Image (cartoon, rainbow over all chains, first blue to last red; front, side, top):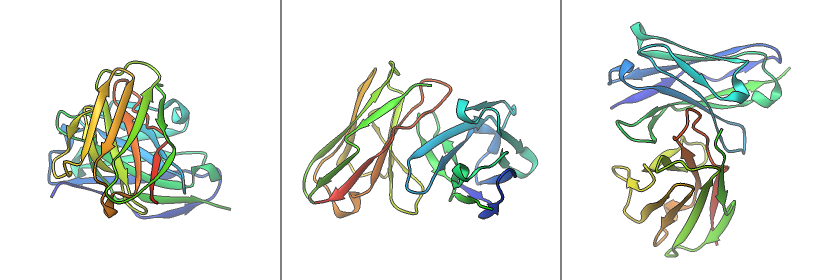
Length: 119
Length: 107
């Protein structure tokens, strides 16, 4: 079935960067945007931005504009989200998600990647 | 960014009850709204897209309505598996913000 598989959990020190991958399978990767969403422990969902895998064009949420970079490698059907200058507030579960075909809603989600920021 | 305000933040109900969760947008978003259900330790699950369209495989006891700034998600005849947290999300602007969530507990 169509799926998004994310990289494994990690622990980072404050000030470091983290890069999370999201590999798409069983669909044409360049046909659907990939969005990134995060969820801090016990908190709600926070939209971070999207990348158009066909063109590489990105749009970031204002809160992350200065620290996030979303890229893709079409040869391996994988999207990446890199977040820099990490603080403890960035400890969260990071999800990639794909909008449905001609619908406003994400019908495919990755399993999530837990990033812990700790000294 | 367009703000979404959900209410209530939490509610308690019993199996068999009907409940309604509302989502208000800070400006008009036409029908560009989705609803998700999330259970602990799981990714969100799409329930409703385009404000009122039921996602394939989602039980018909879930329904969505609204347009412009005011939206609602109704769950009729609650089942034990419906106790979870629900989020709305808007797609009208380039920034696809979420509501803060509504936690639905068993009374």
